[in-house]
Structures are given as structure tokens and as C-alpha cells.
Image (cartoon, one colour):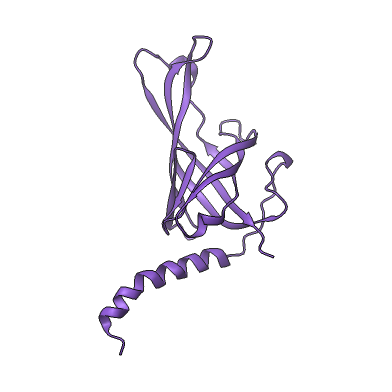
Length: 181
């Protein structure tokens, strides 16, 4: 006999499996992007997320000794199409989904954003995974449709003060995995 307690214990697992299946079942088309940042042909989109947060820069010195803002890390929430927070993006670069899965990566290609005041568009390849869920099989990530996030002007950087700057940005992230055969 199924008791109320056993149903309550099974509910979190059922919710997790349902969310994972929903995310994998969403049919998201590949975005139109410049050739250098196209995901490999044998991959399909498993998730599209909007990131909203900040690019965090630290003030230091460039190799020539001049003041320079350098990216420390992104700090952003990931949102689905219904404006529900589904995860976060942070240093690594890394993305963690609310289902517990995580992917880290390395940028392999970039193109300038059509908006000169915005950070570049990227193609990132996965270099590591943790957990089971939506991000477990991700092999490529695109960052496109960026708004904001550029570092402050170098003239505002005083390396003696060790300042940080949080510059707001948004972007669309497309997560790709191999097409199952």
C-alpha cells in the first residue's frame, strides 16, 4: 500500500526527473551565428538560457605596466523562457543547473558583438562535468546576443587601490550535446 509518506519521499525524485525530461524535450532551433562560433554539426541544442548578472573586473597592470581592467568572473543567474531562474553562471567559466548538473568550459572562438558596447560572442567547448541532468552531456556552449559587460575605461583603473567593478550584462546561452543516433 502506498502511503502519503512514501509519496512525499518519491516526489523530489519525480520532480527532478520531470524537469530533466522537460528540458531535454524542448525543441530549440540552432541560432544563426557567424561561422567562427558555430557549434559542431553533430550537436543539437539541449537548452537555451538567458543570463542576467554582471561581469566582474579587477584593476591591475597589463604586461606593459599600464593600468588595465581584467575579467575576474561572470556572476549571473540563468533564466528559462518563462523567466524562472534555472541555474547560475560563474567563474570557470562554469554553469550550474538547478537539477545539480554542471559544465565547465574553455572559450575556443569569439566574434565581436554587433553592439560595440557589449562583450564578444563566444563558442565554448566543455572541459568538465559534474552531476546528472541537463548539463551532463553538454559539449559546446554559445554566448550570443550580449548586452553590456564591457570593462570600464582603463583611465578609471588605479592598480594601487585594487578596485573591482561589476558591469551589468545579459546574454543568451545555447547548450549543445551530441545528436543521439
